[in-house]
Length: 166
Figure 1 (tube, one colour):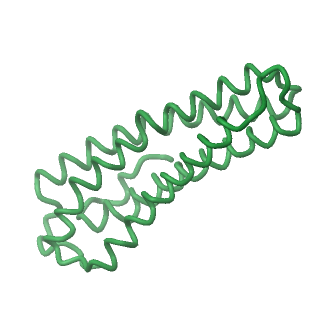
Figure 2 (figure 1 turned 180 degrees about the vertical axis):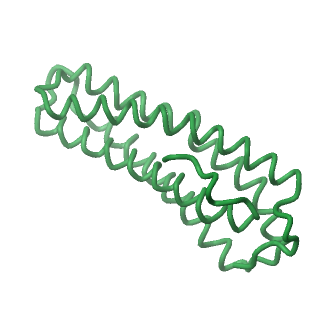
């Protein structure tokens, strides 16, 4: 991908958005790590279905209410800037693949939660499978944030050393 023509870095508008998104990333990382710790504790113990499902529902809500809308806002803001920088349609499609993969993870978790047995009848093996899926979803979102801050933000002219700790 091309880097911006200006050696001074991103435009003020893009730089402002990068800062806003970086702050959102920090909050998302904090919340995702809390959920991940809770899942790790549940997997190591004999989890009660109600506690495990509560954590997974919180993860589902975080994706629906914060992660996916965040991705949509980033796309809206940054794709205009990237097109203006001469990034090819193919390269933009590669970036969109990341967002689509997060949407797939969200749908996969939603389906798994909707198809599960009633809370009182859920098998511990099935519960552990759901918790592991939650871990995978969290890992995927954290990797997306790291990738975005290291690659996308730097392509837009930001200093990659300023990346959040995802």
